[in-house]
Structure formats: structure tokens, C-alpha cells
Amino acid sequence: MILVVGIVVGILFLEETHQEKRYRRDIGLEVGHRLLRPLVRTRRADFLDKSTDAIFDESRSLLDDEPPPGYRTTEGSPRYPSSRSPSPAAPPYNRSKPSVTWHGKSTATGIQKTFTRPVVTHIIGFGILAYHTMSFDQLMPIFLSSKVSRVPPNLPFKFTGGFGMSSKDEGMLMVGQGIYSMFAQAVLFPLLARRFGCLKIFRVTVIMWPILYFLVPYTVLLPREHRMLGICFCLLWRTTAQALSYPPNNIMLANSAPSMLVLGTINGAAGSTASLCRAFGPTITGFIHSKGLKVGVSGLAWWVTGIVCMLGAFESVLMTEPRRGETVTSHTDEEAADDSPMINPLSIDAALVAAAGPELSNTDEFLRATRSRTDPKDGTEA
Image 1 (cartoon, rainbow, N blue to C red):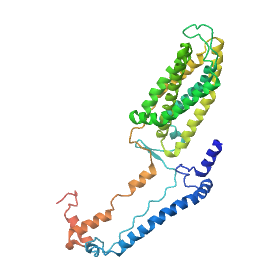
Image 2 (tube, rainbow, N blue to C red):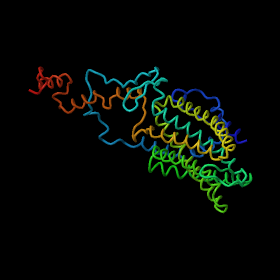
Image 3 (cartoon, helix red, strand yellow):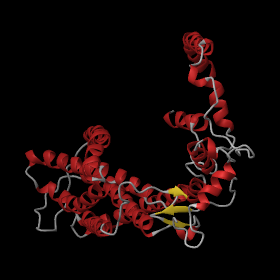
Image 4 (cartoon, rainbow, N blue to C red):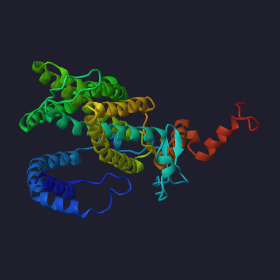
């Protein structure tokens, strides 16, 4: 039922954000607006009834008032006797494929410029993160439900067994984990990101992941009265690390895009990479876990996954984050902004004419007087 509600909301009310496709007709969105129109119309009608009278009275009072004396004459207003001030024309629309300005350089939005080094490093980090977090989600229920071993451990690596928990107890742990995950993502991550930045948070988190994978199997060796405390601590660590890993990676991936036009391509590539790693993660981890149980090493799959986490920690060193204040802007928009002057040159000439006085009120006389003050050879004042 929840899935059906999500599909309906996406079809009827989700708007396109792509720069080139956001203005295309969307039949689903039109149907959604028609369904909401009676509700919106009722609330809008109540608002208009209260505000229309006040706006009309204010407009009528402004029209009926006499203008001040200074606004009744046009004397002193600069004008050209023999020329007309042209109205500013809108820049022509460029239908060519836009380029982008990234770090002050104009680049194309082709496929060869889309996957830059920062983009590729963030995608790889996203894939490694998806691999070992999915492996953790597969190994932890097996570890919790495995029977307690009666075989004495042969430290440091050779031991087996689990916690022997029931499905009900595991479900309660998962519920608590989910509640804390919402708190960590909604409260903890924004505070830390505002204080330290996404890149520092991500690097510290991925460095802490391998330590967790190394310690989890040893919780089964704790005294019986401390085992639940140890597993709760590991789950808390895992939930906090995941809440502080995925959001900064997604943010840095979006910020590293060379253009908003290729953001969909980058997100698609990142999602495909993560899905591929999520598919292979449980398969490879399950195979390693079965081999570990045969040789009496139940932590083998955990430790191999920790080695993958170490690769992700080394890879995070190669990641970069755009400095604060750097933005990605369209090159065509930048050219249009540069071509449109902030001050009209005709307005400057008119102001100079008005300041010259009545003896130079004619534009030609003023220009001749200005040229006579300048040496035609070097352009310096005589």
C-alpha cells in the first residue's frame, strides 16, 4: 500500500527539475493540479476576498492624489534632439548545446567531460560503501541467530558461534536501530556537517568502518551478562557510521558535477554502481562466511569485508570537495550577462549633456567641445 501511494504521488505531483526538460508538458502533473484545484481555489478565494478591497482602495488613492510640483514638468530631463533612444533588445536565445563554467574554465557537457576525477572518485566511494553496508546487513542477522558455541575458542582468530537470539529479539533491535537512524540523519548529521564539512565527516567515518568489522566477531567472546551491551554498542556504531557516510557522499557527488545538465547522468551511474555492488556484496560475503564456518573461523567474512572498507578509506584520501563559494554556472548565461551592460551608454551621454549647461545643449556641439580638449595624436589633454 505504501508503494502504491508513492507511485501515485510521483506521477501526479512530482515535478521535473532537469534544465532542458522541466518545461515540457506533463500530463500526470496536470491531472494532479486539477485534482487539487477545488481545495486551492477555496483557500485562494478566501484570501482574495480579504485583500482585493484593500488593494483597490490603495490604488485609487494613489491615482486620485495630485502629483508633487517637481513631477509636473519635464524640464531638465536629458533628451537628444535628433536621435531616439533605442529600447534594449532581449538577447537571442541560443539553442546550441550549452557549455559550463567550472572553476573559471569553460567546458563542454559531453560524456568525456562529465566523469571528471572528482566524480569518478565519489562514485567509487559510493560503490564501496554500498558493498560493505549491504554485507553487514546480511551478516548481522546470521550472527545474532547462530547458536552459542560450546567449543573453546582458539584465539586470536579461530572461534565460532553466535548469540542464539530469537526473531522477536532481533526485530526489537532492528526497531531501535531504525529509530536512532532517523535521529542521526535528521539531527546529528546536519550539526556535524555545519561544523566540520562533508569531506571531513566522510573521511573520519570510513576510517572507523574497518575497526567495527574487526571487533564485531569478538563480541561473542564477552561474558554472558555483557554480550547484549556489546552488540548494542556495535549496532549503534554501525547506524551512526551509515548516517554519516551516505549523505555527505551524495552531497559531494552532486557538488562535483561539472554541470547541472549532466547531474542525472552522474546520479544514474552512481546508482547503477551501488546496485551492482549491493548485488555482489551478499553473494561474495555469504560464500566467504560458509568457507569460514567450515574451517572454524566465523569472523572470516567480517574481516574480509573490513579489508574492503580499508580500500574505501584509502580511496577517500583522493576525494576533493569544492571550496565554499564555488558554483557551477551555465556558460551561455554567463555570456548573456556579460553582453548586457549594467549602465546604458546613452544614459551617460545624456547626463553629460545635461551637466554641460544650456550653451552646449546640442549633442554635436558638446562632442566637438570634448574633442577640442584632447590631443588627436596621443589622446592626452592639451
